[in-house]
Image: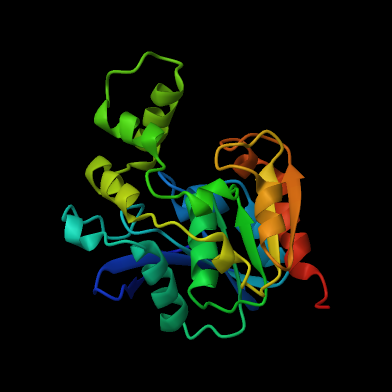
Length: 254
């Protein structure tokens, strides 16, 4: 489907950041993964449309350094946890108080960090993420750093070649994306134990990229883990992922 028109809000440092909306009703903020965009993660595969059909207003930002958002090349524009600062600024800019929250991969980590830092959505989805991806986040992304440092050198068909092809498809900015890798911070397990929001930990059946999804669900007081078909790269493109999100958000509150 055609992507909704891009809208903009200001990050806390004044950066011009993009988001899109689809549907009307209860807001749900969905955050995409690294290298990707809101349009690719949530619109291309029909997830946003499915949620809109359930009566939800789907708010989808482009992360700093990605998509239609600002892509500064100055390291000072990428302090630790800046993606969380940006997402909290979006919630504030839109005046969201009663809303849901979710994200995939880097977006899932960002959503979890928002919870740790005091965000209070009704429900949250942490998808494509395991416990190690949160507790040992600093230094992760070595594969993507290798891709960004070696553009144009990879043999056809290798994982690096496929990642570079995806980067070209979305028009990614290598310099900005490399700086994003330095924004990750570790989340202590005890911080996860204080999150009271009901959380769906949602991961592909073959996804082990960020550690154990089951262990992450076990570290959260009010969480459950659901596995959908696919690997880390393919699960996000499957309709089962969007269906699981829609079902979770449609459940009556306890």
